[in-house]
Image (cartoon, rainbow, N blue to C red; front, side):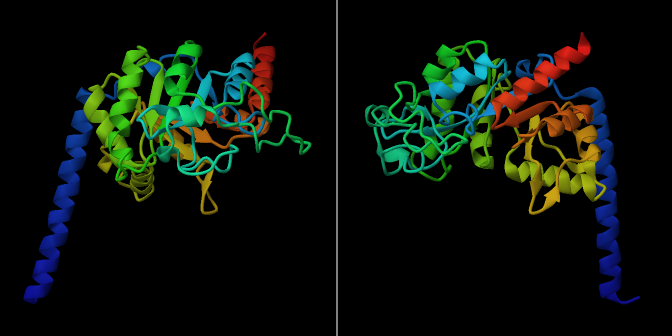
Length: 310
């Protein structure tokens, strides 16, 4: 046996020992310290959340959309937040205001006062191609503070959009935490972000008081480890995986994935669910949260569910 071969075999055995040891530690830790269910998740499932308030039916992220969603009986909203030039937290998705309003430029380059003057229904078109909410008084950008105050009975999934490296992104998690605590909303919000750094920053602030979701990187890590046969190597502390229905043409609707997450008290959520039959399928497979652009479809799902149970 050559020296190189011996070193290679030694390295392989070291990896095997590490995996075995790591597996034993994870099993022991899981046996002694199971994932704690956050207050946000202590309501009856399934959760039906309107994506940006239901962006296919009303101008996204406006009072028009949120009122519509609440009236249809959904559990709550999935929203995005960004910081203004004067560090207010506003409910907004894009980095700039061009697509959804009659304004232009980056959100972070406008003051709150400037943003509130914009028409957030300016570009919205209904199914017939009409613009019924142009210049509507309720088609305005809304602050997170106002949203929390105006809809006290709605659960809210808050997604931090600002890049953690940007000037506003560096303080976004802190400002979000302050608004949540000011409105005593820690038990009815879930904080998520595609940016792992934003989740890490937020977790340092709330000390397990608020539910958080896995970042895109953490979701990917968990899925890869599960399907490579090493699910015990996943050590994330997220309360939920919020996922698209597919990624690069590959379906992410997997019973194996759903069951694994449920076994760890990590709640499974899918967004972009806009068909009634798909809502039925996902709930039957054990999915906890459905995020839809079509609140009326979710309302029909609730109606059918209640009709069946009676």
